[in-house]
Length: 165
Image (cartoon, rainbow, N blue to C red; front, side):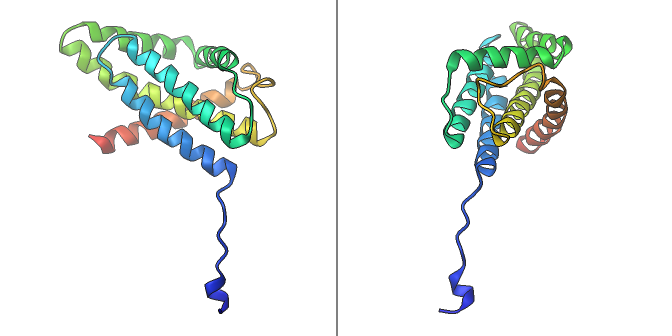
């Protein structure tokens, strides 16, 4: 057996595994944003983000606490600014208006859903990679980083949405 035949199989790092989880759940969040029922879409996105963090906790060998994660997600949602939160709520609420409302809401909310899921996933990868846990996560300290990742996530979500159309 020569050297070429002895190729080493390299396992993906935890960060690589977590990033795959983020990308997969970002698609689910975008899909949840397409739900035609007002506020069911926002609840769906929250459930996707909870699922994503649960999956990531398994990769990092951390204990998952649903109550703690709910509190963290609420604090992070507030950190993107009231305009974004209100925009997501309006995009959901506008779906009440027949035809036009459903169409309008299904344009705006999926991008916001994808961007926020991307941002949540990316900041938790950074936090977990530095040895952090859910218990020592401080949403206030992650505020600026979350905003940056949200902006990146918007671009990624828009690209995904464009390619899926």
